[in-house]
Image 1: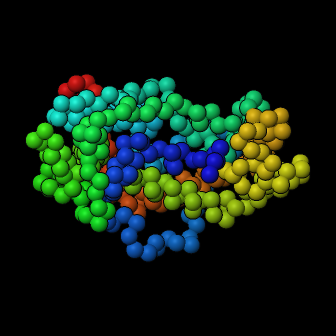
Image 2: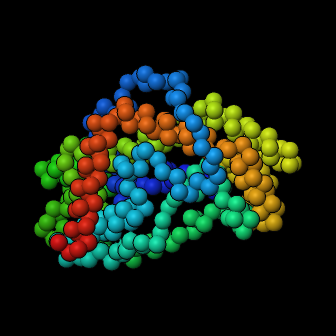
Image 3: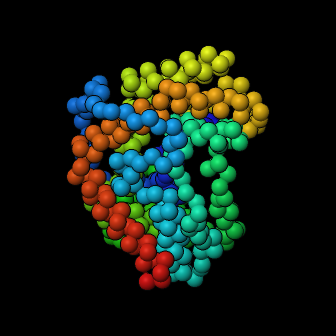
Length: 324
């Protein structure tokens, strides 16, 4: 479903991580984070003073240090492609579709709580400028062996394939042979992902911080203070003739084809004005920060380890990209 307001936390997963997940591998964690009943369930955190905020583009969140930013995600994508190419070369092939990190691409919090930039609303309505960024073109046609090396065998999902590179180097599960050499389970795509994102069995799930972030976002959205602010925003819009109850949903009467229509521009402008009048952004942000802080306090050990492993991952990426 299309949403012009998807929060960055939901968008930040790199293609490398997704490739790992899509090949049937979930990254290993310690199994403790989030386990058991939540002792804070039903309790709303204290928030203190609420600042007056409107534009959300530059908001900073407590979980940010534990999560790769858009620049780092681009570098990790590029580094994974280096690893794919290195693997393919073992069998006499090259990986042709290499990505290059774009330093100009920057995802921000612009639509985390719906449109909030008055100038953007007045210029283009509900169009999200972050959408439409260039994507990787299709992979060229591959020969049978080249495809087998890249993707590996089609594997029975009931097989327990290695979940880390450390395990993969000791396992023959779901492997095959090309040109006299063993092709790992999942081929070079999966090997590259394991080397970068799950090198050892004690690797913390690289998505753990994003998972906590998404949970905090969802809890904040249902928090009584955010619910009240959202209701006030909706009532403000109602006074101007709009029946709109979800700041992050598709605006009523607007379609993908009319996101920048005069009707959309008028509505988006009023939408932002009502957010300013009710301080919806300030309240929602403050509440979400409180939920993120709670998550950090409850999962400090795991998140600290995840941060150390992210730093090590970025150092490996830098080495790969420098030709080391």
